[in-house]
Amino acid sequence: MRKKAANLPKPSLGNSLEKRLVFGLKTHVLNQQTLAGQASYSGIGLHSGSKVMMTFLPAPPNHGLRFRRVDLDGQPEIEAVVENVSDTNRSTTLSKGNVKLHTVEHVLAAFAGSGIDNALVELDANEPPIADGSSLEYCRMIESAGIAAQDEARETYSLEAPIDLQNGDTQMTAFPHDRLKITCTSAGGNGRFTQLFSVEISPDTWRAEISRARTFCYYEEIEHLYKNGLIKGGSLENAVVIRDDAVLTNEPLRYSDEFVRHKILDIIGDLSLIGRPIGAHIVAVLPSHAANCEMARRIVAQIRKPAQAAQTFAPPTANDQQPKVAVEEKAAESIVQDGAQLDVNQIMKVLPHRYPFLMVDRVISIDGNHIIAQKNVTINEPYFQGHFPNHPIMPGVLQLEAIAQVAGILMLKKAENFGKLAYFMAAENVKWRKPVLPGDTLTIDVELTKSRGKIGKAVGKCLVNGEQVSGALITFMLIDNDES
Image 1: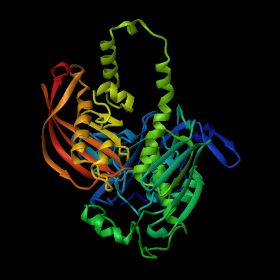
Image 2: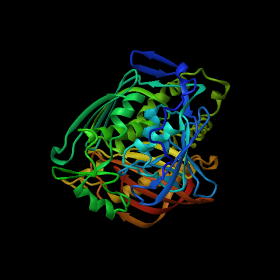
Image 3: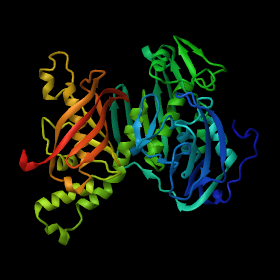
Image 4: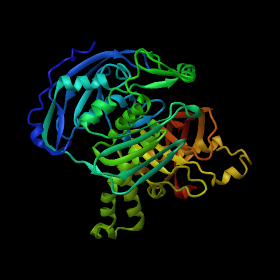
């Protein structure tokens, strides 16, 4: 179990206090921080039910937060950035290639709330130990290890313009603010346990007001979660269960409004995937991991806009005199690369498809042979006129087409494929699980499994709110534009 941390003396912060500016009771940390030592804890994963050992380790400046799977060959690492988010169904999952790590949000919240910028988390399983369902145990680990200031300056991004997001029942808005503040409303079915809480996040408020709030679920959800292979390690030791108007727990509620405070805990953890502290007031109604991570993506996009604008308005160089086709191919080469995020205008520079058959609105992440993209399904889609009148459903074959188009984008990472078209040849193991309706955001997750000559194979799946709605193994052939 965890190395004893209870009743520990207050950890030494070295010279970190000299690196702060104090305004009344509010403290701004000017320099990056890491752990002064290491700490370990052993427990079980909430969803996997497997035993896991987790160790927090210091990391150098600008390292960020990373997870290392010591149980796998080569001990691969996954950076805690929103580009690596692959699933948000009931928790936040990070992936890099075939390596996955589930339910990372409570650990990330502990680091973000405590002001830790750089740390390495070692695990010997695919999920951190859930402990008591809050971030309290992880805070104790940080206290046990201590906090150390580093020489590099901390770069906090202050939001420049509001960002509004609607995702299913979730409404989130981010407003400019001088530090991170979160105002959240949560509620169950029929308005049960509707709660509101607002807090400005600092290490002190994090520790006292948020860190001890435990995860919770509704009794009627439990059977569904078990059938879907989740909460295998769940119990009243690590979660609060709501049944009708009763609260089932092995101890009294830690806060009278513990449920909404845990939602704020999740928001803090998911927003840490931006990769740096932010100054923003987040107002969230019925938040979810999917919406939290989408807000993180939109904030990252705002952070990157000034750099993109600078490139757009830069004076022309000698290279700008190249022939138009060569310039377009060079543009495609520069945007289809690992770590890239593409908007629809960039996608149309890569794919030849146009209205009404362009099935991709944005690319969220590209990493090796893995790509994640999105399609916003609106009632204005022309196929809804006949599929079906008064009961609009996105045709399943168009979901397959979306998978093929996203796979085509991934193929264009290779320079020799520029200007080519991807033709469908076969689709195997096709499954449609749930209907896709107007207002849904279709997430298209594709992994290229084979690329030899003109032939490519890929495994693709479409998801809505983190739940898979379709999937297939597709085979396609690349041809030159002039052959079509």
